[in-house]
Length: 171
Image 1 (cartoon, rainbow, N blue to C red):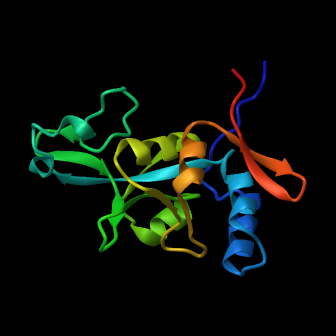
Image 2: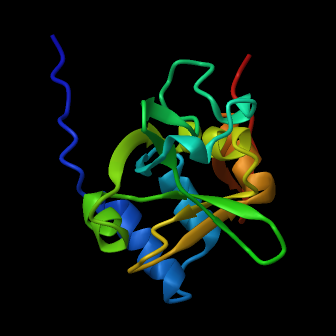
Image 3: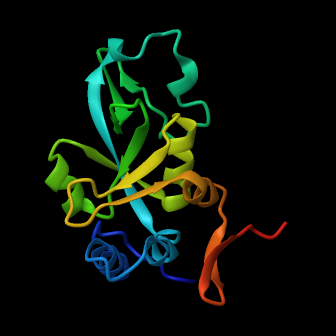
């Protein structure tokens, strides 16, 4: 019987190194994505008043039963995933590489562990145009556009010569 690894909430060392190199301009976004695509992320869930999400707004309900849509909770309060909005209206869903970066951002947020693929898909499902990883540092990465779509679809980022390319999953 195979042993299951216990998730302690620590930031994976390889992901921390790739993000730090990217922040220092010694690495590329592709270098981060190669590691991130296999990572577990923590999407912060915060309590909000129940009337934050109008009853007719079903776009954010938990239709698939995964517990990571926007409005969930009990009477009087709901749990919601957190996104940032830019002045131009674009939104980015927040995600963190571990409990320490999450706590740096908010001590009250509850972590919802998701694969990077699930977090990217959640961002798209919620109408966000980006996945913002470790917004409070020490290194921040924004996954958007084709990278966000490929990550959400389960594509694999690999090398083709000197270039990085997204490869679709096998049928």
